[in-house]
Length: 84
Length: 219
Image (cartoon, rainbow over all chains, first blue to last red; front, top):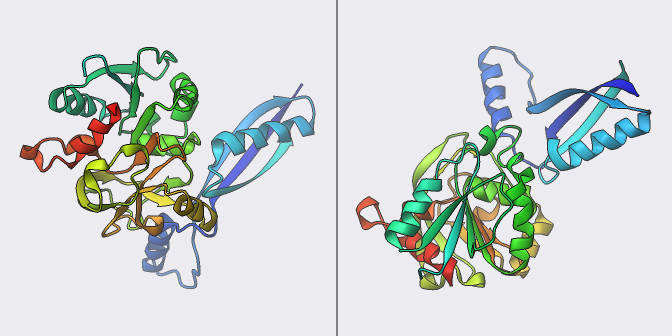
């Protein structure tokens, strides 16, 4: 078994309004930073997990994402991983 | 109705469980039993309430962790028997996360935690939850920061075609898709809603429209 470092990025789907992102965008403008056309907030989950090969890592992550980490009604996810 | 028992599920972070018990026992004379979320024993329970609150601290997403409890696993079989389940506020969020009801609940459009009475239109008579309110508007309190119902166009059409939209806000306070405040499953025995009927069971605290809904748990 090998150890893998995994990063999962979860984002609201583009069709779902992100009021928190809008609020931060407004604050960013008040900070005086021009040119911010869009700002949306997501989540980053970092985990270390054991697997015997890369396909097993993918299977585990996709199960976690589909069933727990993300709500696929409103969120999309992507992930990256590397061997520790 | 002494032979009838309503189970009230208690998660770590539930905070409306005792309100529901007060409404059912004190106002409607319906026997209740608190059920800890780690139990899967629903024997002797005739209907179930998933109360409001902040189960598991709302970590990750509201209701996302609660759906993995033993009790929610057992609830799938319970629902298949046709017995009634109502999910109020966080209970509604759990019902969507666990797949009992379609769609999702996310943060309010204006980012405010909204705590006020709202007027609602009753849209469906399916399941017999609202039979006191045919063609009437009702008033119930809401108290949530993440009560904006969201579904895609396909799901909305499914809800419409099957008469599953239970309640709509008159003045959409949180930006919900098509003003939806509560929905039903296809069989009509599962109701999820963001407003709190248990807080509208006494004229002295603002109204009794909630009492008329909760009493239908036993019919």
